[in-house]
Length: 170
Image (tube, rainbow, N blue to C red):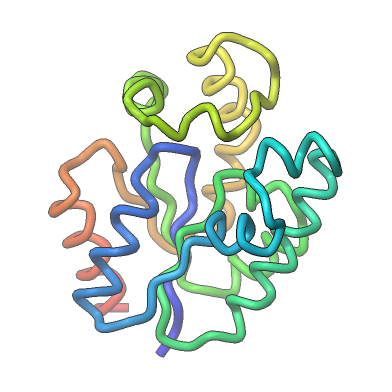
């Protein structure tokens, strides 16, 4: 059974959708950010302060390599996993789903998320501007990795149904 990898920006719904898909398919569930935090022994912001974004991306690559060895898993990937070429190569050769979500929906979700402050700003800009800049940079990367693209702003049930239908019918 091939794994399912969910990609997209922070707050697009990857973890929520991955948990539901894993239950429905009776697959294992993994959140690459949770695994990374356990490996790091601290929150992302602390790790980035200590080792910089490059150190964080190195650890993120290591985590993805470990997850590829799993079989029958649904993996919620960190939003920036697509910025490294070695990760792109892995994701292009897997069943990868991009949860495409517009800037306003992402900003609203991040404002409601109590964990929002755990991840340091990538640009130092206001939230909506930062999200737009990141999407401008990463949109082609997300699209380039995805076997399937779904609207992450839709209802969770609808998003899961679309992914399941596409995964089963491929």
